[in-house]
Image (cartoon, rainbow, N blue to C red):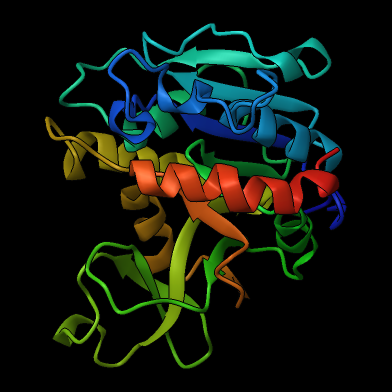
Length: 272
């Protein structure tokens, strides 16, 4: 590839923000999950946290993929950080983050242009902002998946398994201890944060198109389906960190309380 990659920067980002997540707030009329507040200021939602972290690491184009409930919403950080919304209008019980990812890739915004370093991430995971620097600063030209090497043995989380060289080859739930990973070692838990390097953009586009046509046709899909195809090709590297207190996914009211009470206060000083 002729274009030089600046290993300290992120150029673009796709934030998958179509989730509703009504149950985590504990009240029936709560906003969709990406728009829930992370403190008492009224100016810091999940989306605001991500926008500020990404902009500080160089992201000049940020795309939010929203459902009909989140599409077009305005948050505090958007006053200084421009974003562009992409609508995921698949039927509610059919669509998933895989559809959102494919829609972003094919939205006509030329996100995967073969030149830019593109972050792909979930909106409902709160990350220590310094993790973006670790992901962007990792060596190599292959795309990267951020993995937490400290994990519990559970069937509820997506685990990443690698070969003898540590190259991710398979990921999913419920794989620990099964014959499918007999010759692989568990690298840790997937965090939902990926860096799509320019040289792999065509592979990401083709993998997403294949998943939409064959693997996930007429079923609800997750973007891990697409990532799994890149792993099967040996086209990803794992960036592993060991402190499981540096990010947290919010799926339950208890997890939401922990994020607001413990994690946001711990990291807020590092948030630009």
